[in-house]
Image (tube, rainbow, N blue to C red):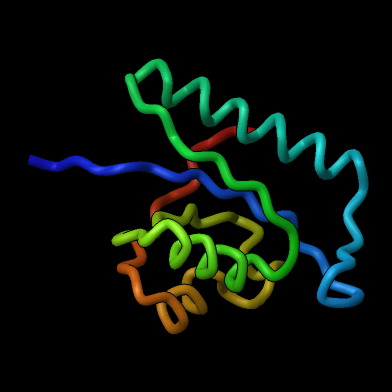
Length: 111
């Protein structure tokens, strides 16, 4: 059978000023918390209790790091209509950098 744990990560794209200082507004952190809460609620309706991960920085770097920390076998990423604006092809970078398999799905979540 298919089983395992699910982690949901949301990354706020941000330039790090230093290794410890990232420029993110309270509004962005709040929106991230809301998105993660929404994901948790939707998955709970299906009997799934995900691990929630909030991060800020380079999305590919943060996703790869989270995948390695959680020993993920597969990374699932949505194809955003704005993908060309954010870090030049996130899915392509994940495929190159991640040890896990990468599954790209159409982004059907309305925000």
